Amino acid sequence: MRACVIGAGLGGMLTAAKLCKMGCDVEVFEQLPFIGGRFTNIEYKGYQLTTGAMHMIPHGNTGPLSTLLSDVGADVDIISSHPAITIRIPDGDSFEDVQFGELVSRLGFWNKLMYKLLILEARLSGAGNNHSFKYWISRRLHDEAALNFADTFCGWALSVTSEQITAKEGVAIIKNIYNRGGSGIPVGGCKAIIDALSEVIKQSGGKIHTNHKVEKIILENDVIKSIRVKNRNLAYDVIISNLGHIETQKLIHITGSGNYTAAREYKNKLASIVPSAGIKINIASDTPLIDHTGVLLTPYARRINGLNQVTNADPTLAPPGKHLIMAHIAVRSSDLEREARLGLEDLKTILHGVNYEVLMVQTYHSRWPVNRCISGRDIGNTTPYKHLYVVGDGAKGCGGIEVDGIALGVENTVKEIMQLQSTISF
Image 1 (cartoon, rainbow, N blue to C red):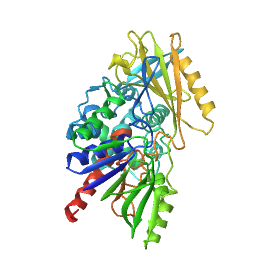
Image 2: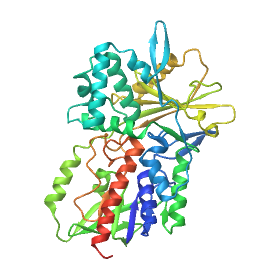
Image 3: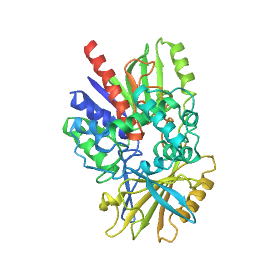
Image 4: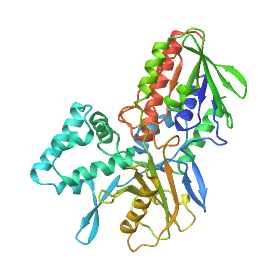
């Protein structure tokens, strides 16, 4: 089977590596001069910053991404976070950092009981609906600290508020956290994962073309036939796009007869897709600001959702003797300058009395977002066009946080392609 992957971001690279291992003839086309998209490193002043994602995998070495990397033989060392999270809460005129269990223990008797009921409901029944995650929590748990925590967790993990995701998605995430565990940091950062996947693809006979923008996806009678790239038409049996559903649809060029009703319904469905936006603030320090490898969540900050000091797990991500800390904001308005300013003011409070340097403020929105689709609103990996699939952060698997959600979507797509391969002789 000849397979074309459009986009060399994490979703595209995972798919290409998996298909190569299945014996497919794979080519990857990337319009940028580098691979990795929003999931690779950029060096700045000797620090390994990123083009988008945090140097962090939500479920560490026990989650979907780690499993998929192992399946394809991509050699990546992932350091588990211990503890997974601490939470900074007010303590008189100061603050204290507590682990999640300690936060729960401070709930009143009734709220503690309701919390246990919520977790039991999530783990055993997989309950949840299209009400908001915030509503699902607040119908039982009447505690401001708990709702603040839900917002800061969703902001850090998904770049949304608890009001913006469905209860169904939130419950699925809780279940995955209990089943799969907490986060981890890849040694070498995001780029280590992309480089390992690139090596797998090339060693398996696959090809990766950078500076190659796909201009069209050409279909005839609703079946993909070829792509148009650098003024050439190249034919493939299956095409997988890492561009998200909206950008993929923009490339569609239909020839001959086609099911225009299905295409129209698909376009209408795309109108409901909303990307998530965020801001990352990269901080340097001579002294440690966080004393563990997990995440410090900040539910009482105005904008900062959390921070992690990645050099606690991998000192090579910063110059010798230095520390790299990444803070994240789920933006709450379209005024990105104001959002960033509020985040910088938060840092003065969170890191009060500590010397630090702001290395870079990075914004992710519009066509370079945190996620091309808010978690829980993904419309799947298939399209109305035969043999055309979509992967990446615009087509994540249910309950998958960020890159682990991407990995779930890739696995779903590969299953679809395997079924296709078993029924059709290419």
